[in-house]
Structures are given as structure tokens and as C-alpha cells.
Image 1 (cartoon, rainbow, N blue to C red):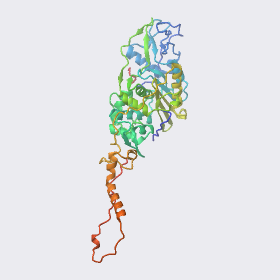
Image 2 (cartoon, rainbow, N blue to C red):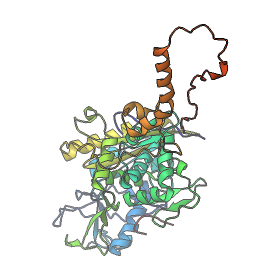
Image 3 (cartoon, helix red, strand yellow):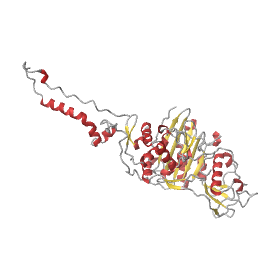
Image 4 (spheres, rainbow, N blue to C red):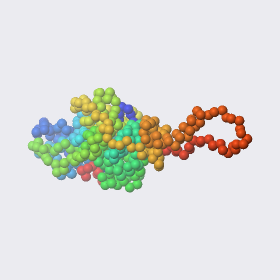
Amino acid sequence: MRFNKLHLAVAGAVSLVVAVGVSIVLGNLPEEASGSGGEEHAALLYADGQALPADFADTHPALAAGVHAELAARYGLDPDELYDAAARPDGPRVVLTLDRALQEAAEETSGEAGVVAVEPGTGAVRCYYGAEAETGADQLGPDAPHPPSSVFDMVTAATALEAGASLESWWSDAEADVTLVQAVRESRTAAMDAVAAEYGVAEVLETAGAMGLTAIADDEGVLRDVAAGDFDGLDAAGLGSYPVSVVDMAGVYATIAADGVHADTHFIERVVDGEGRTVEPAQGIRTDQAIAETTAQDLQFTGLGESEAIEDRDFFGVAADFHGETTQSWFVGAIPQLSVAAWANGSAASEGGVPLWRNVIDTAIEVNDYEAEELPGASGAGDDLTDGIADEDGRIDPDSEYCQANPDIEGCTEAESPSESPTETEQEEETSEEPEPEPDPTTSSEEEPDPPTTSSEEETTTEDCGWPWC
């Protein structure tokens, strides 16, 4: 089985979830709004305070399980303690992070496909639809991870940038030597594998964990806990093929969009008591500077899409196709205000993941009136490394793309020196050549010098529940 990667010019997640049928008590039909935030009387509410549909738990069992796990971990509450019009009219109500308009847009998705949106800087999940109605199982969480292919290249690139490489560092690809930014944009598999091999599986996955990856599956489908450093047996060349969750990748790209700040992905905005007062959680949302701001800036530049594609505004993203028994398509990308990851399989993947992504992004821009923000461009940080294209003696092929782009660089001129001297000698002989005199029988032919030969020494180098709250 071979992975084919694809980046689109126009662009271009969570932890373990046990997809079990869980009933959340939503109470009776919502009564009039009350409380300081205008929340309706129901157990679970959208971010705007309106009640979720009465059958929400039945149609979104994995999401309901995630909400329950977070509720228990952060607030110490069980579902049967929440508001119920008849049994517990003074019970607490849970305001989720879900944006009603975005959730409705996400649920327009048909077939075996899903989409999730995470807010950069806060980690709030603004919509989450995992095709449970179509497939009978959540397709966004780690219970059903998918090979990310090129979508993972941004993590590998982040590792190199964090280690001091620049976007203009050079790496060997099967077809040509390329810069780091070219390798990501053009989905150069061999070059990205070389980058991963240079820094190692552990360092790449530690970077991924800091950015929001919680789990990764090995070749046998066994989920590995990234935070625990369970990396034994994983190969650098397989990082694009080891399955990861869609919601995790939305969180990773949210970290990039937030200039390197990661916030734990979560579903609960707040909990209010019977009088509408906010209940303080026992556990807050962890945020930290996962990667340097310059690293995030360079990654934004690397994935920069055509601004005309979405309302004349900058965005960044990566698209990828995986061709196995079926075709799977990804598109993960972000504007500064929202990171969206879309995934589709089989017939639902015929148009790729971009339409799913655009539907949510366009809705978010319209209903939330997001202002267009210009991305800053490349930072210029890091060193323009060439170790990845040099041979064992540190020489670089003078015919390489690097030397063609940098003909006066010292490494290139040194590499050319063994073949330059004979060539110059040959030219001197050609210009000073005179008519050959008649042979002198008294002169030995052995005294004539051997003609210079071109050096052939130079070589060319090619070559259980796993939500955070459980």
C-alpha cells in the first residue's frame, strides 16, 4: 500500500474517545431564557445559550461521551446531576463551546466524512461532526484515526525549524534537492522523510505532542500515547502513514494559527447553577507556548494559500490524498480566528476535503464577522543548512539545484575545483599549440609529456477513553 501525497495551491483531532451510546439528560423542551447569560433551561446548551436538540446524545454518542468525561474531570459532575425540568429544575446547566451556526453547517456533511473546528488560542471546539449517523461510529477521534500523509509535514517542518534550521535549508529528495519550504509545499516525500530521519522520531513526536497531538497508531493499529513517549518501533519514514485523529490535527494547526500557543482542546465553555451563576471548574484549560512564534510564522508562510480563495483574506493549509483500499482526502487549514480539519473517505472524497473545509470557514466568516488579517510572512530565522545534500566529505554536487541557485557559495566552488584545473590546462594547450615539427630521429618519443586527463574522482551525491479529561 503506497501513500500518494497532494498539496493544493489554494491552501491548504482529539484524544481517545470510546464511541458508546450515552444518554445525556436534556430535560423537557427548553423554557424561557434565564440567568445572567440568558441561558435556556436545558442540561446542554450551545455557546449562545440555546438548547441542543433533544436527540443530540443519540446522534452524537462519541461527542456526548467526551462532554461527560470533561464534565467529570473539570467540574466533578455526573450527567444525572444536571438540569431536568421535572426532577432537577435547579440543577446545573452546561454551556458548550459549540457554535450553533457552525455545528449546523458541519452537519450538512454527507457520506463518510467529518469536519471539526478549533479556536486558536483557546482550544474551544466550535463544531464537531464525525459522520456517526452515516457510519455508526465517530470518524474524528482516535478510535478511528486516519493516515495524515502530507498533512503531517507541517509537524516535521516545525521540528526542523525549532532545531535551528531555516525555511531555506536544503534537503535531498529522490528527484532533486529542495529547500524545506519547497519540500512541504510540493509534498516531497523523500525530502520530508530525510528531515524526519535527521531529527528522529522521538523529537518529531515530542514537537507534535506540544502542538496538540495526543495519540498516534502504529502499523498494527495500536494507539500510542504521545505524552507518555511511547515511540518504540515507529519509523521516521512512516510518520505520514501512521494514523492520527482529525480533531488532533485541527488542534495542531490551531497552535500554528495562534503563533505557537497551544490550548487544550475542550467542549465546555462554562457551567451555570440554577440561578445562572458561573460555577468555577476544579481544572482549567492549560495553555502554553508550544513552539516559537517565528516557527509558527514560518509554517503559516509555508502553507499560505491564494488570498482570493476565501473572501480576499490570508489563510494557510495543507491538502492530502491517501490512496489505499479506498481514497481518503484531507484538508486542514486555518485563518487566524479558526482552524478547521476536514476528512472524507470513499465516494465522499471525490471532491477532496476542501469543500467541507470551505463550508465551515465561509459560515464562520459570515456569522461571526471575522475581520481579514494579513499573515506576516517568513521570519528569516534559522540557518540555511546544507548538510542534507552534502556527501561524506562535505562536498556538494556542482550540478545540484543548490549550486545552480547559489553558484558563488563556497561549498559549490570547492566541489568544482578538482575538475577545473585539468580543463584550464587543456585550454592553455589549445591556445598555445603550434604546428608540429618534423620528428627528430635523435629525440626519444618517451620525453613527450602525457596529455592531461580530466579527474574522475568527484562523485555526485543523491540520495479506555482518551479525552484529556479521562
